[in-house]
Length: 342
Image (cartoon, rainbow, N blue to C red; front, side, top):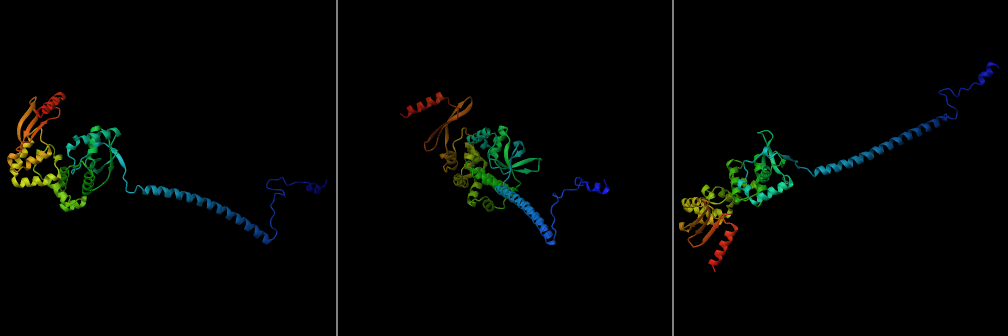
């Protein structure tokens, strides 16, 4: 076989990189055809890019919706302050605290303490502010009774922590405590007096405007706080003093201060002491003989446990300390009195 015939029989189609005629795409043979093919390819690329962009836009829209929902939730907490549990040992009372320690020995405080014990802490947070010394400690803005309840129970106290200046502290404490019915007139007066003495407010009127009270009401509370110590001690508790006591006590002191002080000291020495209304009547009596004269004292184990008093009008009062009479003796006394008036 000639060399020419052998070459004709060679098959180069299976060599790497070479494809059969069927696999090679047809190419345009004219210039317009080539331009049309290029345009179709470009159009396909644009469509694919457009689809990608639309998918990304849908994802961005979904993310924006989630972001808007989160922002709306955050707006509901604008101005809110987080609360946290703090060791009561790290919290000190405010210098303007208006809660007398006698408030921690009342049925109302016992009820509050039981509620705190049942919940494991105070449900309603108190408010405190950080203080420089000692480091890591706080001062009460309001909530002294809740703090004391947690302290006695050995529980951490739930607190709102806020950095506020002295005047703002006073205003918040006063408004929060005045809203509670068990805050006494004497406690309010003492708080106002301390604030004015410390120069927290330049005048009574500015103090009244800051706490939203009438100047006359603030003045009345201050007059209670200004009563002589002997007069205050004549009452079983300073918490017994009422706003309506101011006018008659003031008039009695202006008329005969020495006589009022003398009667007040006599009342303070009595045990048990009369009720608040009776103390007021005795302190303000114009006739010195109108005051009660002790008729008889009843003692038990060397201690006075009861008394029988009679005033100038002939009214008699019989008193016994709680627990002085056994149930049997109390019953016998009631039976005796009942028979006496038959």
